[in-house]
Image (cartoon, rainbow, N blue to C red; front, side, top):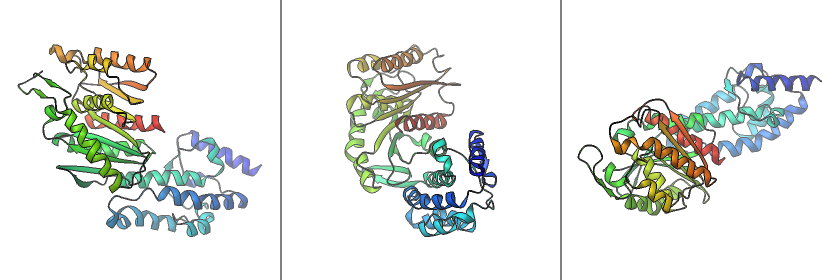
Length: 355
């Protein structure tokens, strides 16, 4: 009865959304031994995938310091110490307040909550540390963890790169899934991301229609290099995303190949001349598509760009009728508001939908 009461208490704390580990009841000796045995395999498996991309400073910045603190509280990521000290950790001395993300079946082993939350902690710490990798003639900025189950690709320009750290941090904070994120730069936004040539819609800069070359770089150079360099599994889920014209590029790329399992298109330029007719004849092949738009984006005097609202609604309807896993989310404001957070939300949704 005592154990059941304590399990109910833990369940109540979980349903409340967050709780301090001081409040978690001490398990009976039987459960402590079960938790210790459970922790050995799970800790080893989960934490093996959360090392920083910077292997040389991982011990100092991501791995060693948290591990030292955990040892002081009676828990260590290493198998032998975790087994020996699990009872010490359960004595209520720890001061960490961690948000619960457990299903009810896992509540019988309270230590599993520690494992999941600490795994997320290490993943976030590694994700926000950038590394530059030269792929072909493009200096790509890489975030995340090696051996990840998701490969996120985003075409970017210099302006977007300024906010890339905050975008990746938002992705990591909102998702429990491991990922490797590659920000791939373009020199000419209008030329390299447009699927075909088109006259200027605003200003004097026209569209060069060189998206095919950009897609070829991703499929023949970037993706193979990232898989090899960061030990990605063969069945890694590749999600192509982007904002504005990069969002349209992601949608268009998915009409050309089935390589991308998901598309994260935040405020995509679906106003682009000829896009809607093209997509009807060359359907998007990805199974999971995220679409979003600012609720003020279609309020413009530019007749071409004003069609973006009607077009994105029509595209969402078409995808839903084809039984794709898709969503259309409306954000507050115009096109240039919170581009980094909107794009992060797009990637998070696709990863969660894939899980």
